[in-house]
Length: 238
Image (cartoon, rainbow, N blue to C red; front, side, top):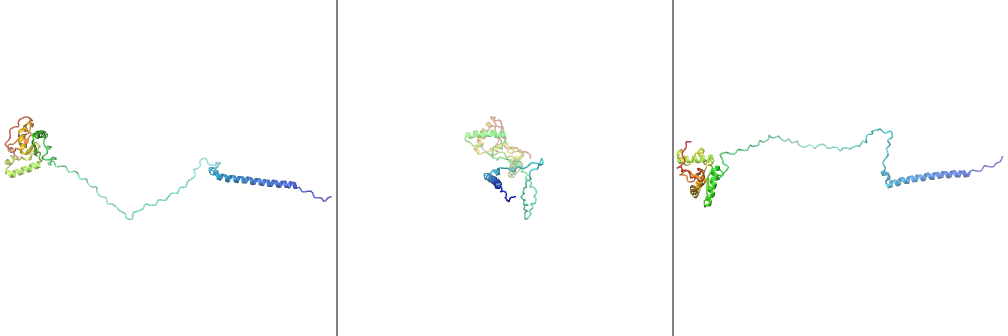
């Protein structure tokens, strides 16, 4: 027997150390590379563009959409008036009906030609135009009168003349008056009375009474002579 110690295998040990060291270096390098790549992706915004991948394995066919929680803002209660007020109901007001115009009040002036009958109005307009060419102005002193005014005139005549017969020679009661019917006209001034008395027949307008030089009516056809005048109005039983 010998006491020689077998030689150590230093070569294989070194080889193992180098292998382990190389593997560690490789792992560190790969880790550093991955870490550098992740940091570079974050810097370039690559990670923000990626959406998370949700696995659909074993997921139900009709999955409900995710529930979104909505926070409602509480509505404050309506403010109450400090003192309750009540408005008493009022009955509806009745609209007053328009009052009808009195039929006794004419809608024209007594000195207007508009209140006369169509026949007398037409003839008198022609006579007025002819008199104006002769330098005479025919003015209507009293044309159509209301029944109320005619009654006042007749009442005054009764007091003045003292009897019905005497009063009707100048003023007739309303139901007999040609003025109330718009068929008579009193002319003024005196020059107009004279002109119309001479020329009125040409237009069918004639003086009717001897005692009233101003009173004219449409008594004949234009161009025909006027009928004989009456001395005064004949009294009629009222």
